Image (tube, rainbow over all chains, first blue to last red):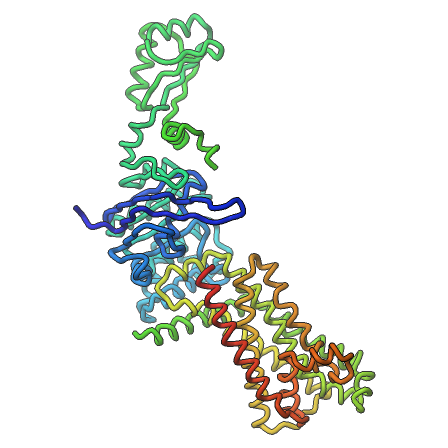
Length: 316
Length: 257
């Protein structure tokens, strides 16, 4: 078995508030091998951020054993801090300082020599496309730039394990793609990443393994493919001009759910191009005219509906 | 590196961060320097004529009397700013980042304290400059000036650590701005603006025994040659005690937040 960068067993945490104890994590086990991306997927309030806070030494767990980068979290938190980097959901940059000053601050706090610090800062500014804005205060940066600076600051100390807490929440699609590219490069360089996200697509794009967190418990874990296989809900929806054509289509296809009111037929599907083409060819052969078509692939809502029996929204 | 060198290195990094921030955002500093100067001018020119007569002199005599009180008030005003700055800093992600790093934890707070004390020393220097220009006539020797400056810096340290602790305990930056408010009133409820023997008994009792009074009496004595007596020892004890307890309180609050 390969070495584990993160190994947690029986992680528990509850907060006390007016309405009594609120259990946030209820026995979570995690095993993340070195050099891989592991994604914690779940809706708001599932316990993702709490998990990251515990693993990154910000909050103490009520129970459970955790080892990060080979160090026991409870006994040697400073050793853990020396090995990790954290980029949270809210940008952790000093907005009054410039991008370059922020990076140099991290270099100083990482106890790099002056020369190494300058070199590292220059490298990271280049790599994260921040050279032009390097002398501007971070307060003037766009959301995407702040997030890039944030991650660059995390990388100054060359951490072996990186926690990314919803790194693309609130970013536009282009910035999100850029962030994904950076994450892939990091893992290619050998670091381990624990990524939390609300987006199945993001976990699907990046993660080697995905764990689904709901109400403080892991309800499923596996590769993206393994999880998707467990999720029905993908289908092709065909629309027809009248009831006669709909009936003809039902006879031709033989599977699916017809809706006579809406004049539609839902055919279960993985959304693959081949399957859709075969379906259309079949209808064409039978001379059934299709008025409209839409393809729906499984998403996080389907995952939650399937695995918890509840809609994602109601979990919040 | 030993723990102590590490702490010193991280603290100096954090102090540089804080000084840069103060330069980047000077409006707070300007406000902290200007407010006490305005109060000084108000008290000397608006109230000083009458109040000076009560002291057996004139406007000049009142200028001499009121400067130590306003110096302490300047520090207390600055404490409000420090508390707000700390509370704001805590709500930003950057402090969470510092906590996940292998650095000396107290260094984050040390940066704030030293930055604020530097700010306050500038404020006090400007205030003394203005006071000298409008008739403040101290008769202190160089040594007495240094002693007074030393006591004021110690006082600034104590009040600033207290402000940091209050800022850490506050739920919001708005709440943090209210917490140090009583400190601004203490020079009034002591020997800062009028001698305590002109006050009603209960108030005089409070005024004589609250911490600001011995500090103001010591500064007054050092700069103007009025009797100091036991005030110096009391002043040092108050400052040192407040500084140490507030430091411990702040460090604990930071670890828990």
